[in-house]
Image 1 (spheres, rainbow, N blue to C red):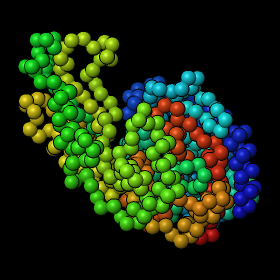
Image 2 (cartoon, rainbow, N blue to C red; image 1 turned 180 degrees about the vertical axis):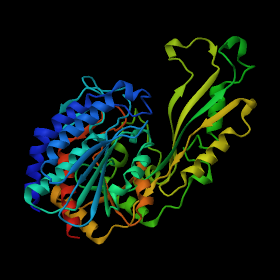
Image 3 (tube, helix red, strand yellow; image 1 turned 90 degrees about the vertical axis):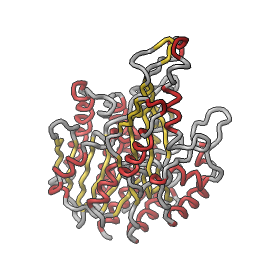
Image 4 (cartoon, rainbow, N blue to C red; image 1 turned 120 degrees about the vertical axis):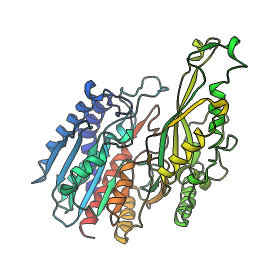
Length: 470
């Protein structure tokens, strides 16, 4: 494979075709079902699926025998399924999603979640980087090989529409399509991140998660605070005291033994190496307010805190008016949405049960307390790289960036990876992505770094070429 020709091909297809389509895609508010219960009625998801499928059908004409189907199971979000024959042995399963996180406040002036704006090398808007680009990058990598007559294996591409809700629909589709998928020997997932935009980054692990609502109710309705305070306990105070059962309020360290695992030595070594590469960028790329400092001293420890240790975030609250609307009323209840990140090799269901027991047991003042967390999602720890794949990743990174591949875990979750790891224990994984410094997936000012996206797609082309001759 001539890498310079691949780079030129990527420049053209991204500038002429992919960026314009992604720009239109950003305009579609196709929020994941967890954030839009009426997604089917609103039609945004269907519009995005149609847009993706229409673009892809035109490109599949370059691959004789290729098939594309929008698969629909009852009461499930749709899934786009590609089956592209190859000239070499083996099957590559490539994954992405097209559902989006909700709007989030705080977008810079002139930008917005559904308002695509191109500033220099960055395309701003919700979903372009997480993860709308994945299908386009996957097909572009295959087209780049076709343009040079370079062989590749059979390629299965799956683009789902419920990832941002925890992929509740995906297992049903994987079972439904099992016979057509077969057993892939390589999985490529482009829904992850990168430590910088200067080299290829391979994700070595992903944390699991437990998400649920903690509800504390003390009265059946709001009561004048002058009449009730001192008699009726504050639901907010009770909520805070319950959270202190599972998290040290001074340090942020989780308090339950069931949430911890022993961190493998190789992952600790990779965290040290990533810290050497990134330096203070491990934390300085985050939008700290004022003089706020990170939670740990060393950069390597910060990486491990983010990727291998359990952490709690309160991501939503219910029961409270905005400050300007807050009257002298003791509020009847407090609801906190809890997002608990579980270590990659931890047992998320065990963690869920332990957290629920700790929060609901012996409620202060015998208040009504319920922690509603439907399920736990396990994390994922990558298998050891095959020698051919490790060499290919380095070759790809040197070809695209002039630097070797780097390794780090990610603090987020991709439920599909754990699912595939269980189903295909002998499969190799390339989990990577372009969510790098300041790209801010799920938050305001999310952007896609266009030059990095081109180089990432070129790198995947190299891996596909090497897979064919492994």
